[in-house]
Each structure stands twice: as C-alpha cells, then as structure tokens.
Length: 194
Image (cartoon, rainbow, N blue to C red):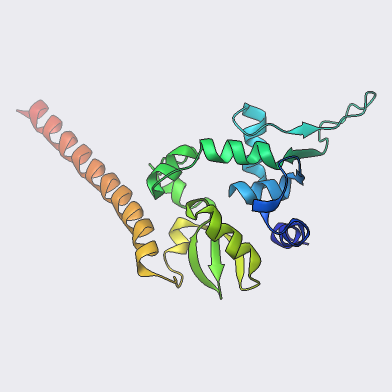
C-alpha cells in the first residue's frame, strides 16, 4: 500500500490532519508525505538533527540500527510551521535545494497531480488545499524531477510559470557564468601573448 493510500485511511479515521489530535502517531512514510519530502530525506533530517522530533522504540538488548521510527503529528505541525515558505524559491532554499546546478533539477521532487495533470509541488500548497487533495481519489503524489515536470501537462499555466521561471533563471545564470568564464580565459590568454 502506498503512503498516500495509508494517509487516506488515516484521514478517514480522524477526518483529515486538521482534526487529528497532536498526539497522533504517524509512520515515517506518512510523516514524509505530510512534510512533502521523501522518506530518505526525512531519514537524512534525522541523521543531521534538522528534522522534526521523532520517537524511536528500541529494545534494550537490541543492536539493530534500523529501528522503527514514528512521529507525533503535533511535532510535524510545529516543524512544518517553522519551515513554511511564501515562494517556490524560498521553498527550495528551506529544503536545502538552492537549485544552483544542473544536478539539482534532476532530483525527484513530490508533486500533486489531479487527473494525471500536475497541480503543484507538495510543499507549495496551503494546508487547506493539502487536505482537499487528500480527500479526493483523483489526486496523487508523484515523484518527478523539475526538469521532467516542466514537460508534463499542468492544471494552470500560472503554477507552471513559477517553476519555469526558476528553471530558466538558473539555466540563464549558468550560461552567463560559462560565457563570462570563457571571456576571462580569452582575455587572460591575450594578455599573456601581448
């Protein structure tokens, strides 16, 4: 069962995250979806101490490294509120994705789709819209790179434009830097030969 299916089951029990109690315990998979990050990214947050508080039950005599991890919804809400953003670029910066190189654009990101059309990045929707998307069977979360998502069908040109502008801006910056570096090399070579 996918994390979104699991989350929908939780939503039916507690009538969405908004009415879930703060002490509700969520798995790492569901927590990652709530935060809009991959399970691996959430694990990396744990390792670096940059993520939300978590609960790890470990038997006293166990030497296992991969103990089950759970999160309290209240801790996730607090952490998410501290990391709320107002723009796509700010979201990228908060998540540690400065989008400064080509590699940044090929890493998978979570995007909401409705009827197989891209709706928005998971982190850029409001809590209210997030709840609505959870409540409809037409919505799914897919993991896709920014480079590839720009080639997909979108619900609105405005939302796509945000990501297009980000992508084009970084690419233009990289091209400009490359051209400037070439000009510097040419000038340096001319200076040496004169």
